[in-house]
Structures are given as C-alpha cells and as structure tokens.
View 1 (cartoon, protein in one colour):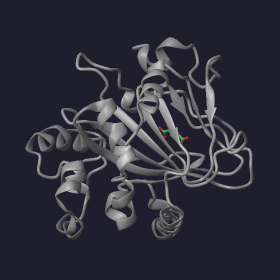
View 2: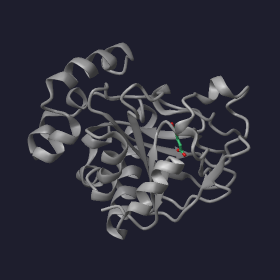
View 3: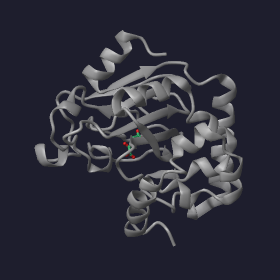
View 4: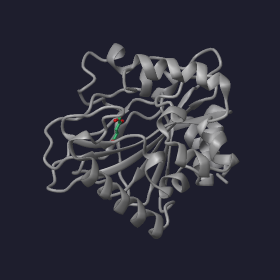
Length: 257
Ligand SMILES: O=C(O)CCC(=O)C(=O)O
C-alpha cells in the first residue's frame, strides 16, 4: 500500500505527503458537507471539542456524514497508521479552517502533548488538504525529525510561537493527504490571504491509549447501527478496554454533557 521508500521517509521525517490521494469526488463531497455543517452549527461549531480564535472548527465528524466514514478508511492512511502505531484506533475527526487574514501562527506542539512511551509512538495525525496549502494561506509548519527528540517544543524552545530554524512549510494541492507521526513538532501558520484554508484532521492513537473524543458516546445510535465491522474496529466501538480508558478522559475534559 505504501512503498518501503515512503515508509522510510515517514520514519525519518515524521510525516509523509501523498499528493492526489483524495479523488475529485471525495474532495468535493467533503468540502460540501463541511460548509453545510459550518452553516448548520453556526456558533456551536467545534464545541464538542474546542473552539479556537482565528479558525473555524468542527468536531465529531464521523457522526456527521457518510463521506467522513469513507475518508477515514482510505487504505494508504490506515497503512500509515499501522506503521506508526501498530494496533490503532481513531481518536477524533475534526475540521480546522484558518480564517482569512489571521495574525499569528499556532505554537509548535505535539498532539495531546504526547511524548513516546516505553512502547514507542502512540499518536498519529492525518491532514486532508481541502484547499491548496500555500506559502501564504496558513500551511502547516513541521520540524522534520523532531518526533525522535523525546521533547515537547514548549519545554525545549523558549517560545513555541517562534520560528524554528529547522521548520518547513508543508504545501500541496487540495486533495493531498499528509500522514504524520503526531509526536513531530508542528502547527498551523497565519493565513495572509483573503480566503479560508480548510483542513480535516484524522487523529489516531494506539489502542492502549484513550481516545481524544470518545466515539462510542459521541456517535448517535442511528450512526452506530449502520457501521460495519471494520469501522466498528477503527472506532473501537466494541472494545471494553476503550470504554474504561476513554470514558474517563471524555468526562474529565468536559466535552460530554
Ligand atoms: O491546521 C493545521 O495546519 C494544523 C493544526 C494543528 O496542528 C492543531 O490544531 O493541532
């Protein structure tokens, strides 16, 4: 599914860019559904997880349209997750759309503040470019190789908002997908154009860790009823250990009412 050269690049850099992975049809369907959801949810958008100044956000997307179910099952993406994590599950599926003319970059960070543990890597993200990512519109910055440093940027750098001397901008055409080891230092950048820069983030974790968003609680009964065995496995819907791990996180982080 992914070549040995691609897997070696993922190991070395902590990310792998796959141009054109989304079909035209899936890209259009994602864009359409995402804009419908922003319209429908208005000021509530993103509220199941978080809202962010300077960006529109959506959370809990698996529950919000069949196109999202398809998007998390793309074989190359799952092969990348298995390579980074071994036994994986989806942790969350969110959209982040950087507003036009934002002033500030996001700080460099690692997702869930996670450092590798004694079993290795445990978080992996996926950036689906729903618009072109350019040098001007808020492309994600990444510090290649930093997933191996065993440090968080806010501890190692004086100021994680600052530019890192080794950072690069990940640019690409809409429809590109970036598979990331989410221990790699990364962050969104300011959008200096007049248009939104839309991305979807398919965040996965190792099966022995809590989900960022507890899918079993967040997905409506009618969504769960139509999911087949493969999606149920990816979402850990029948996994009692995940219930113990993720229920607690979901409650303490306050996004379940
Ligand atoms: O949207 C991006 O470019 C990166 C966003 C990100 O890293 C985050 O929100 O944690």
